[in-house]
Length: 365
Image 1 (cartoon, rainbow, N blue to C red):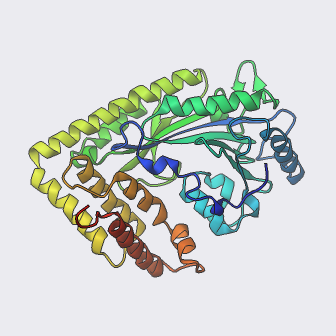
Image 2: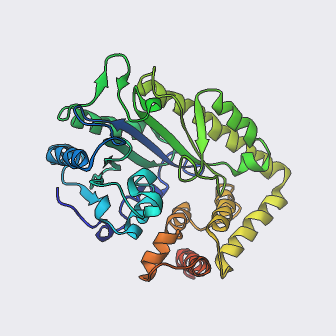
Image 3: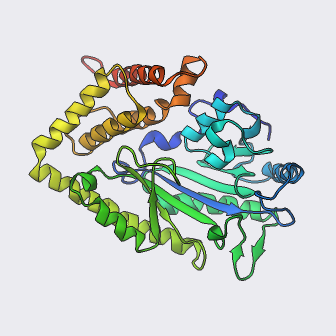
């Protein structure tokens, strides 16, 4: 497996944008990550550069014999420029720990590995030696877990994992011990927000072992009515139990959201139509857009599409806008250096207008 410039691969890592998964009008994506460490090496927080280099080399030696990442894509994170690292972060393919603060300085000997034909891969030398991961479209915890589990079995048959008979898989952070599993669903909940039921629902999930975060995971704010709902517990239950629990509880949240949307249509159709069309109009004509403002407007249009209050654009188009209207993607597309805040907002609006115009059907089609 040779290092590759991921920029040469069209839409690298973005298959999840296609809005083909179950309940994709509410659930944008499902992610499953599991943490693994190798025996005989210090955890990443204590590892020296030589340790990290040895871990990277050890993992690289088995990748070509490991379906499904054999013949996949290998990206040296610490050899990328800062914009390249931020591009991967904006695509939700890496964590902030792997790319460094603001993409400015990545940890040494860090890498991303991605399958060339499946939505599965791994990060090397992040908070743990390995973070196996999959990101899929829609609400699909069991399918997504299956991809990660298969990769885990292949790697685990060739690499000596750090494992304790009582505590399970050993991890850098004690809260991840046991299964080392973190599963989450990125879910759009404007109905619950507008009917003021969201706090009740979020309190309810926290009482049954789940938690919520913003668009970029831990420490990020909720924007555009997008919530990441994930498990808190990793120890004392099997991976299958944790996935089934997430499937059950998030499934209930999806149903609550559908009920809330039905209430909005029944009791406040004119208000919702006005909100949706105002959002769509601003996206099509604004000359300057901040990212948070963009996400809130996209939320209104997503709701309108789900309720069939507007005929287009497709959810796929909105998903692409969400990714490609971020700062690093705008700078990459323009081929320029770093843009200032006002310049970014202007370029963001230009990109959004163009993306929506291209998505409109031609006359007579």
